[in-house]
Image 1 (cartoon, helix red, strand yellow):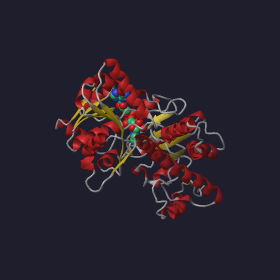
Image 2 (cartoon, rainbow, N blue to C red):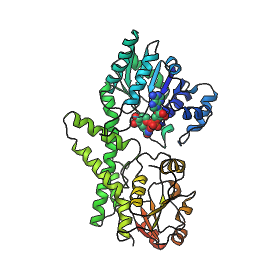
Image 3 (tube, helix red, strand yellow):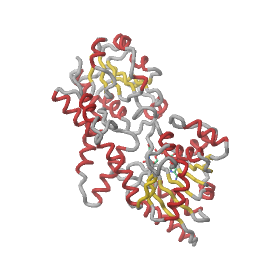
Image 4 (tube, helix red, strand yellow):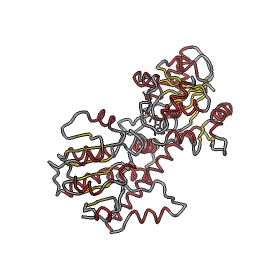
Amino acid sequence: MKVTVFGTGYVGLVQGAVLADVGHDVVCVDIDAAKVAALQAGRVPIHEPGLAPIVQANQAAGRLRFTTGAAEGVAHGELIFLAVGTPPDEDGSADLQHVLAVARTIATHMAAPKTIVNKSTVPVGTADQVAEAVRAVLQQRGAPIAFEVVSNPEFLKEGAAVADCKRPDRIVIGTGSAAAEAQLRELYAPFNRNHDKIVVMDVKSAELTKYAANAMLATKISFINEIANLAERLGADIEAVRRGIGSDPRIGYHFIYPGVGYGGSCFPKDVKALIHTAKGVGFTPDVLLAVEQRNGAQRRVLAERIVAHYGGDVRGKTVAVWGLAFKPETDDMREAPSRALLQALWAAGAQVRAHDPVAMDEARRLFGERDDLVLCDTPLEALQGADCLAIVTEWKIFRVPDFDQMARLLKDRMVFDGRNLYEPAVLARHGLGYESIGRPGVA
Ligand code: NAD
């Protein structure tokens, strides 16, 4: 099928590449000319395992093209995907300017019926707004062309986006149109062979499903962090508690890892947007408000620990930081807990030596040159001359470090672990002090 995708970010690029990979004819449109030029040259601007080879192979096969030309993109696709950003506005609501701009662009250029498929995460009612925006432009043009607006939220995980798109758990299609449903069933047929993963529903329910999914996952994280805080104060071990509750299939092991709070481009903004939506209809979302509050506090925990360890004064101290990306296997630092830690440490007068396996360029772009930050090429280099270590992202490479060398390099022989990567007894054996989340510390 002929498909156009507007937006070549984490969602649009991966979806476009995966659709091309099963044989669809895909054109990706982006307004970022530098990004499009890089993609045209076969360079993938984000770190996502397995993405570059399928982009390059499908480009070479002529099934995947990149352009800044909106008219060309609109003319190409019978299905047109919206995969542009929906960042939070100042009041927490989702900013729909990019979504509505693309809607108007489509309406400006379309000369034949189109099915507009929204993959961006958008509040309930957005499909109606998109339809209204398209209709208004078509009316101005005096061009009564038929179109449908379908909601098809995306559930991929950054760091596993290609695998998730190739083998989705479910494909949610929100539409009241049998014709649009049939088109999307045809599009996704290659991903739907083993058993039926397609869940068809009305548009509003599809829009809400995406927020409900992210809010549920954020709730699990804030819940376990709350229990971790309790465990610390009660002398219990959250890792034992986690295993104890995860074994109940009604609870499960996923997403109950204690840590330094959720981050990334989705959970914080989507929880905020859902709160905003709820308030907009006169409903107080007590659970969501608590989830957000706990997360805000949890993002401060590591910095507070470090400052408390040094008696309230970290001026002149150098903290090594392992992990800058908001989670492993991505270079994305949007709303990353590392940023909260670094800002808090800098505000308190500490210096930082940081390493991340893939987010170094992103860190350079975000922080620029500063006296209180040294970006280091290896984990060990970050430890050189540092007083203590803080671990923020659970990259595999951090899991089995050389503890003896760590103990030699860290002046204060102290590790603050925001991801519970190590056994406290092991660090004690190597003469390292250790504070983690929700477990007894080792002084
Ligand atoms: P992103 O910021 O990585 O990419 C968005 C892209 O859209 C950018 O390249 C930008 O230049 C482009 N763009 C903006 N306006 C445009 C226009 N008028 N025409 C063409 N391109 C335009 O965003 P993302 O992370 O891919 O997220 C996109 C949407 O998908 C968001 O609503 C997000 O909430 C949702 N989502 C994201 C994820 C994720 O893990 N990143 C997962 C599921 C859903």
